[in-house]
Image 1 (cartoon, one colour):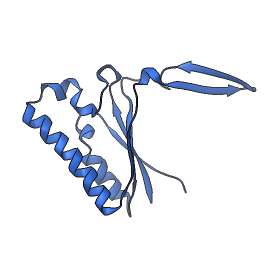
Image 2 (cartoon, rainbow, N blue to C red; image 1 turned 90 degrees about the horizontal axis):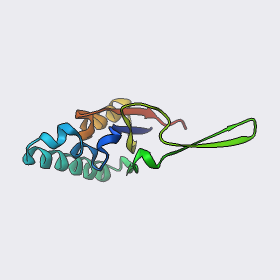
Image 3 (cartoon, rainbow, N blue to C red; image 1 turned 120 degrees about the vertical axis):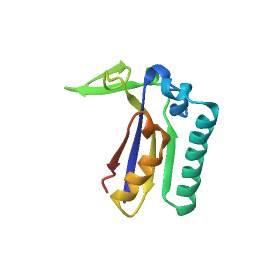
Length: 125
């Protein structure tokens, strides 16, 4: 089954990989930041090797986001992300795994899970 892993981050400290741009991440010693980067690279390599990685994409800054709504046939486009939240969507992984537990395991290994949140959503088929 395919799952969408939604990686959240703070738009004030936007950059990729986002865990290196958080206030907490910048305070880490260089060796810890390098370890997190290696953790991400190892995860991506493993998922690719196992055939579980469908896609992994960082998103541009929320400032570049447009929201489109159509009401009574009239299109309205507004700037900015869809919500006024402290955290915004930073990137996505799409994985194809056998169980929901495997999707959760992968989400827990994405470094941003240590600083913000990674949402796990099944993709309807």
